[in-house]
Length: 392
Image (cartoon, rainbow, N blue to C red):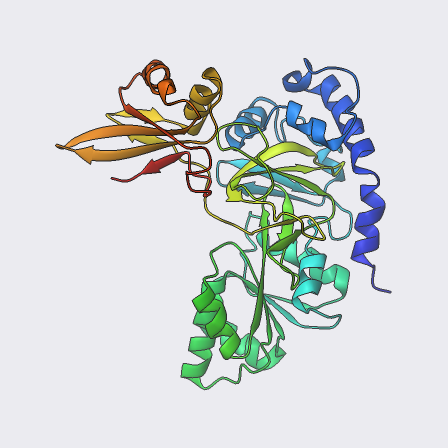
């Protein structure tokens, strides 16, 4: 009998706040990074904002100091299913529970049904993407062709022989396969559903793939977290079960209001490998007033560090400037070239135009670089999540 992945994950999830407090208690005991936090349990999920953000650079350092997973894993290595190496290097585990990565819900929302043959074109070497979807396919009851990327000649043979209904992979490679099949005269009419991630899906490409008979849906996830959100026919992407998503101002751990663009910060409460306030480096926004909690999808990268006159300027420095001067709203540093020299111009939403002078002093003190400051009306800067705009 095929396992119900939603039931399996629901049994593991329980009450998010209770599970969060259990993980916090364990981490206070085992991790120096969280030892100084107040011992009292969190009263609500909103209190997450008081915990430190975990960035990938910190995770690399933690794993190097305490191999293999920085002491974050709740189960020993012997109790895990697979062990991965992602660029960084970052070491990612896979637990033994069914649909551990949470991909079954995304596949089902895309139209995948029990018995569908799935052509999985993600790599089966060291990184987890292929296994993320393989686990979901197994939970639904779908046979998988472990095709991997490239090698289009063999992919044509597999399509002709196994007649897969579902494609899993990056969107660009689906177009390549359709083009190759048409050139070679291979009947690829079996391919009707596409589950894509890992690269942008422009509206033009989605329309082309749809016009060629493949209904494409996309999801958002990472190698550290599994599937965070996915398309289900509603606006944007619905958040997956088992994850808590915050949208924060880049360079800070401060949540922004629903609708404002910022960095995706995810808490995943799986006992095998819980991650608390993990900063993905990706941008999105919560869709206000939606029936389910949803994000607008992937909206670019939050890693906006730029080099000015040989020195790096980072979003967290701009955030520090805003915190130092009361009354600041959004800040946006524009970097340009004039007279063959780098120039910085800081735009600050503030009610008082006299704030420009102290802001200029803070800009110089924090970045060790001089720049101009312009005070603008609150709400006048673009809602695109950009803290540093490199215009050079």
